[in-house]
Length: 297
Image 1 (tube, rainbow, N blue to C red):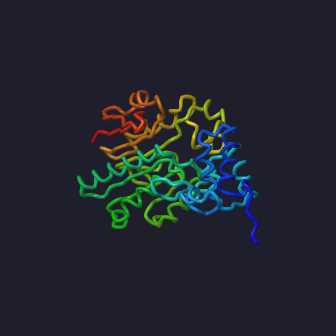
Image 2: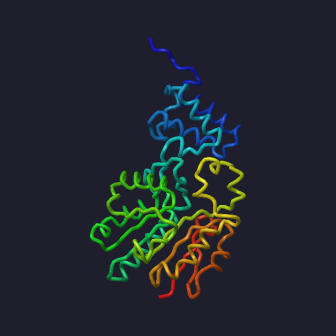
Image 3: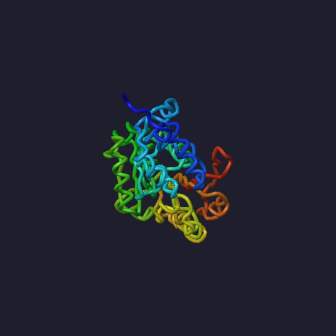
């Protein structure tokens, strides 16, 4: 005769207990967190967890996962991956966790590259600065795999952190595009005109959080690498440097796409190089999210 698991040893009981614990700890999404952690524990999809409330679970293994989340550790670090644009991205403390808002950056980059390839006959160079986990680079490489294979497009992914580049290489390899992307440790666009060509399209999700906010260590800020978050006193230090470098580091007529924080659009627009055309792209919530800079020819 098989013992029937007690309430704490079932999906329903485990979810109830975990949600209560996470809510008390201040999680903004206790139910979703509990469901994702239980799906990870069982090796099932979240839909399976919701459809099998009576199934037994290993409470002794579930409790430490809940404790880590209650302490503030991001779900993506606990599970070791993040679903992003239908991609399975490996995540750990070597790089920033891919955000939903950065999907807009990838979408706009795809649009710009496609337009340039349709308009121009020659080869195109696209460069992602501060690639981190390489989420955007992977998305671009998967989308333009054929163009990369025949040399119609060159895709470069750089980062200042060697540790982040290790994670980037792992994600590129996991998606079968590691041989199609040039990965290099670099400070912004420094290698341009040297070891690397000047880019026609620049894509960058640079750190844009003010140092004082990073210092609070609230939420994921206490777990993600500071190098990937800290944008200096006003959050614009690296964005300011990149914009200043564009006239000498980017190709004539280059398109530059920058993810920004709330309230930064006006300041970044004012920093754009002389003669550049600047526009701002809002996200689905209506917040300014992308600054598009078109350099003069």
